[in-house]
Length: 336
Image (tube, rainbow, N blue to C red; front, top):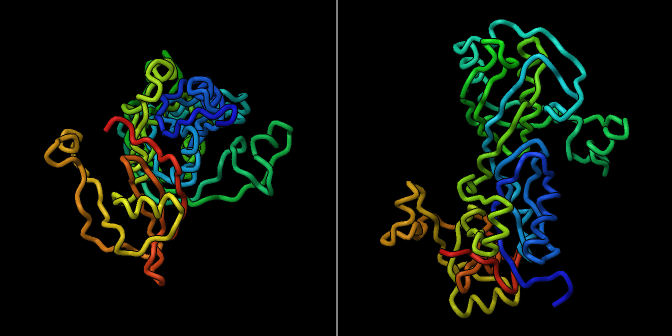
């Protein structure tokens, strides 16, 4: 085993604290697991806290399959000031009076509800988006502003949780729970909410509560992770959200060699989605045989020895599963 390799292959969920960058969390996890191959699957701004999926060892190859999920956040939108980063960690670049209607709970609830739907969004200047190979945030720090194009996003749900500042004891603010598509910047939503109301606004605080199937209650603090180590491992098959198949001995050998698989080699299964208590029940095990035929281009997960052995893509023309990603040691499925 080479230096910096632990032999571990797993995925954990970290409850990132505010004030740390996602890269800081990765470095902390490298020390915890004694493994240099550690990566996160979706940057959280230093200001933000909450769900940060972390892949350890060869499981870092799952990054491409875990980054396209929808996300949920709870954000406090602060009114009256705009910053260069669109959040509270930036420099104030503009202030403005706050319209009285902002403090009206009925108006606020109606406005927040109107945010649901598909739209175009201009990402923040300080973002990790690359344009011609250059990160926008790096260029912004150098004083160079990169021109970025609006992107398609969708707000699936938006719920007003509270209106603050009516008694003047704190700046006016709204607390909102969002469920959004991949690529949606909450900082841009806050900025655009202020623009629509005719005043400056920015993100005062932000907490991510889910990424795809990974929720906050499954995540652990860095301190807890240091104590429990590999016992914090999560099931990557569930996190991927793909249909899956359990390999017999012949399929397991074929997958280990990276071979293609005929269509009839895999009997697809899917999770039962329902109350968590039902999914944990031994009589259902949360798994059932899938009735729907495999679709051309569909990705499926293959489980062998109770580990994720590989990800395959079905080719309709050849009626075969083609290899996308194979793990020689398998990705741990945690304590199932």
